[in-house]
Length: 184
Figure 1: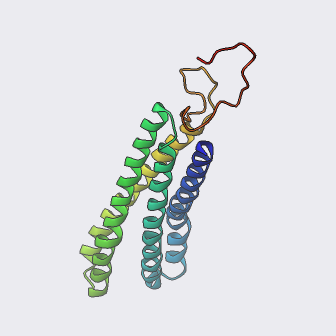
Figure 2 (figure 1 turned 135 degrees about the vertical axis):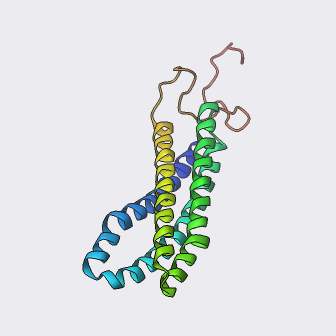
Figure 3 (figure 1 turned 45 degrees about the horizontal axis):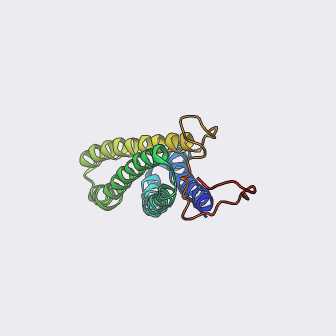
């Protein structure tokens, strides 16, 4: 059961991370430049809708990533647990930035653009970009931790093994005792 939780937690975290991080990459590298190349006046409306959807996606992805990290944390060893805690903090910080972008900053920017206050809009646009880049790097750091935790370890090397805690009360010893041997 412990190994299943590790695999499930890792898989769910990776899936949610790929959706959130990949969405940010796709919008920044493909959607925004293409929208402005095709129809500059209409691009703002397109990107407003896209960013609203990305922000909503990021809320769900962060919830899945935090829940998966918790599930993994419950059954991992000491070093992995410390790294998973750091990953959870990075994810929570990225979620806080997503909440700021989606709940506070984007609605103000939409209002300023519709009111024609382009100088204020441009100032907030730079803030939005800086916050998004910070969020991007927080997620990237969490991905590096996830990759490090997933690296295979040889048993006996600094006591890490697979990183899954051994718990005698949860798993019976499957090896049969030889006649006359005593349990430790």
